[in-house]
Image (cartoon, rainbow, N blue to C red; front, side, top):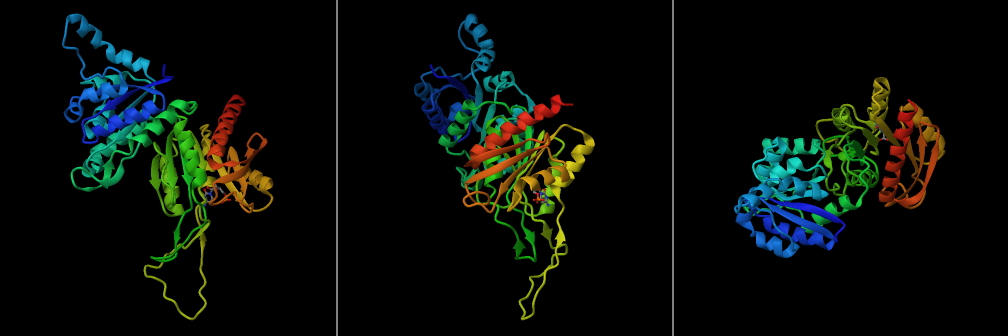
Length: 411
Ligand code: C5P
């Protein structure tokens, strides 16, 4: 018997045929698939396709059409299906389904099942770009994200309606892999909201030039991926980077330190854990020239002002409010790594500082690996040996949870 079983909810969109490939991808991961189709989905694909692929009954309606016994049995089936499966994945999630989920309507089997379902929910929306961008759809997505559901952003590309833009259902294999990894993970971050900053900032010098740094965003993106798979709702505030956002996280793209500050402050209150991985520029030009600076034979000097220290500001605010939110900073150092980490821990009122030596070969900025030392508010120093940033991300989250428990018990 398969160790995991999921409900695959299929909505009525052109991409419904791709749900059949998703069913196969899930089964290749050893997952049992129970398909539920909306009425509209059956206009696009026949239930028989899913029944044949999964070897299981496909649910297509709320009430059986046969004897009164059958009607009675089917009237509680949504509860049974909700209890017997570990995860609900809806692909394609149409604008209509998102709206009904967001507002708690229960007018067919899938939406009724959704209300009865208590495990993780993965939504893979697909629709026309204008429908996706519509404020009503975006507001529903926001509601569903806040509820802790994983939303896999639609891909951009040519759509069936002939337009180009976001709206395509991502590759079924990718959705299947995401679902499988959620099933395979421990769920110690369920119900938590984690705010992560990542990447560099860009501080303009004039309309065409900027100052930045070599941060790749890999550490922050690894933390975002790890946290999302462990069940957290992740808000990723990111400067410009070359890597894609992990599936299931909410991406807020920013350019400058002051934009990053505004994004962080606007989402601070709802966050249980705040991790500041970003390599925020320390200086910027306060009055950016409106026109491009011309080349001359003269020496040019730049006058730079400090940027707001977001971490210090958040630290001061959290320590004032005593809210119990956990604050984690990062420190990239080239010498006296532990001493500097301890100093920053105090100065910025953090609960943990993750320090790394960026002068070492093959670790730190741009590389896939890192070697860090954690300095904790309890006075503990924990060295984490060299490993991939993705593996370190899980270890940092492990230590963060242990620390939070210790701090709460010590209160
Ligand atoms: O002081 P330093 O820049 O080394 O501190 C690094 C930590 O502070 C990182 O967590 C970084 O994201 C944060 N930081 C910040 N705002 C700044 C500079 C750094 O939040 N302006």
